[in-house]
Picture: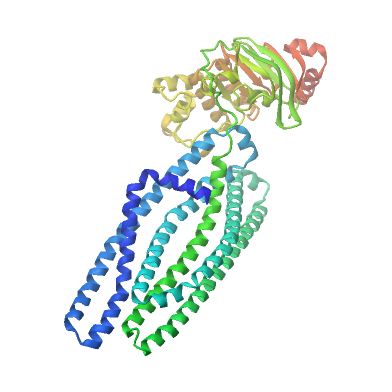
Length: 576
């Protein structure tokens, strides 16, 4: 219950409303408790003594009780729902903030659908734990306590006999609760798997259709759905068994009441009305116990989601500012890697003792086979990952000694797969600098050779690009990405195979925009097509996580090494 206490901490800002809600719940429960007493008076005074005055009072009392109960019921429902919704908003916001601050390593290891499941399925389960369960717990708890008090007032001996069964109920709830929590964890994991599969399948729908794999994806989904069904049915079995177990124990208690209470009525110790009222309170006692057992089961299932949420919130944010970190001054763009080694997985080196230097304004290119370590270098410079050994310096500052915001604020990245947001063209470009004016946005678009095609769109700069920019061609998306980088005006650029996914015509247009973007900036270019880096000031050939060759295009061709081999393969294919 440690995490449940942590969850309750989110209620603190709303304690006043919670207090008022609890009062409403207790008052609504008290109204229910008055009804059996009315039955007692009806039997003992109206039916037995023919008291018309009491009959009139009872009639008025019933109307008043239900009116008051309705008012307080509305109050409890509104206030508890308000608190529950506010807490869920707060938890969801905290979760989103956490994911925004998580290192790239986390997203490399976890599927997008799994991450989405935390914020959707798990947070929704928390809402059930807070809202529905809280109302039922306080309501049924109030009825339970109130019923016991009223029963003690009617007959304390009969009450003690009735309460003998409560420890047995508690033990049954404890046993079932452990099983329900374990099963609840399994259900949340199955839902996360379904969300991941759904996200993956929908986002890759073009691949699915191109390979005619619709039936394969349907089968995959059905299998996962069946696993979720099995977990859900196990939960149903446990819940269905818990309720009759509690009801049977409650029935034993009612049996004792009927026998012993009837014995007291026969011997004149207890009135008939008191016995009927006592039986009604006993039923009121049994119902809360039964409902609380159901709430307890729901709470255990919800706790599985709570545990998953707090597990994520407790994960370390490995890439963060050091306490003594200072802002990186406006940089000239002098970048050095000094004996840098890096491991994604301990014991498996991705880079080994890499040293290189890029002077301000230089264009530095990385070439080599897939998996050689080119993109790893690009990930280390903006500190998406921290080096395992060695250091990366910008203008003499170790990037671990400066704030992440000031470091990344001076680095622009144009990736191979451009990600645009589901917003307008203008908003996507302005993402590079949120305070940019419309004129500055349009100037950046002109510099990226994008202004003409943007103005030809149905709403020009106000055209919505669709999810991930799918309403635009690859070349158009890339030019908007370049405009975004131009607007940011960084001193250091990282181009990660920015034209490799484009056709020849689009590549020429985009390359021209990239040439403008790189003017006067230190640029790191990960190249797939060697034709894009012939003019690079330095070319580093990376293989097996090490720098195998370095030099200009002409120098590397003369060496006849790996670069020359890659060049011959590429241009042989081009000539063919």
